[in-house]
Amino acid sequence: MLEGTRKRRGYRNLEERLLHSRLPLVQRHSEPKKSLQCSGPSMEPTIQNSDIVFAENLSRHFYGIQRGDIVIAKSPSDPKSNICKRVIGLEGDKILTNSPSDFFKSHSYVPTGHVWLEGDNLQNSTDSRYYGPIPYGLIRGRIFFKIWPLSDFGFLRDSPNGHRFSDD
Amino acid sequence: MSFMKLKAISALLTVINFINNNKKSGQWWQSRHRTMLRGVLAKTFRLVGYTIQYGCIAHCAFEYVGGVVMCSGPSMEPTIQNSDIVFAENLSRHFYGIQRGDIVIAKSPSDPKSNICKRVIGLEGDKILTNSPSDFFKSHSYVPTGHVWLEGDNLQNSTDSRYYGPIPYGLIRGRIFFKIWPLSDFGFLRDSPNGHRFSDD
Image 1 (tube, chains in turn yellow, blue):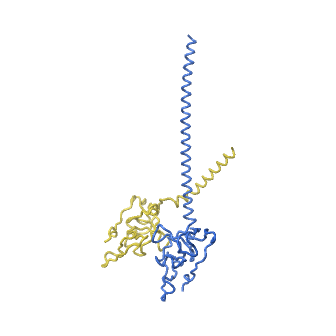
Image 2 (cartoon, helix red, strand yellow):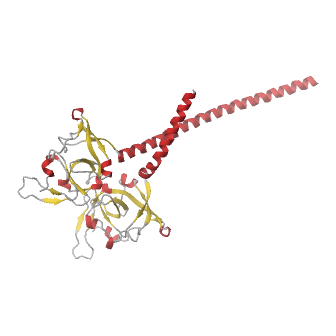
Image 3 (cartoon, chains in turn blue, green):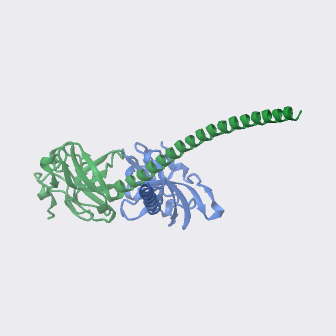
């Protein structure tokens, strides 16, 4: 009986050791929510350079990304980096592909399985107007909450470029 | 008189003792039920905890190390037949070690819910023949940065980059390197039967 007790105690210790070694891995990679730091001017004024935001990865698994969401995606031109843009159009939407000031408006449709991304800072953003619609599979998560700076703490604003969403 | 008093006192004591005994046995039953309930709850929570922990490990393993995959469809014949079971590893894509000639699993660019299984014909910057070699005018194009050009081994029956263009590297999920079913074809996977597609001239 003593031996049985000793074996049980050892097993429990092994599991605790495993738990403590798994925990950082689980927290880093399987957590559905994590905080990230954004850099770059392409999402101003909604997200400034060096802001810290909260991203959740559940929406993309349940295909719940909608128009107007700010998403993080793998860059289509550099798989090692991530981009942070707003979803302007989902598959099948009609998108204005040039500046509204041009005389001839040119439209195009977002292909199936793709999304059209644009930064909020239209003058200073490399987005789908440059590299075209990106496949939905590149989206990593959805940003929904800003935690730094504290002056701007809270849920993120809607797009300042509301006119881009109109399909006519 | 004292005998009567003694008798009364002893009767009272017996009654008190009896009541106490009953109370103790009632408590004992309640505490035993509580202990059993606590035991069952504790076991359930432990089971749920273990399931979550092992689920996380399994998820991390499949996401970052590799796993067993069943392929369906005719687009990779004769290398991979319909309903073959293969082994995929996910380390190459994390270390950016995917090379020309590798068979990869990627998320489909036209349907994010499904995966495709094709061979890498060209990496970024490679010159790709975009039409059949039998055409008179060969049309080439270059694979843009961050993209790969995929083609199935069964060129006549494969929807691949010749149809939807180069796909971003970020869509690649893993690399297939070993077939485990059917046992008649057990082993590492063959090279491409379309070697001529790799030539850049």
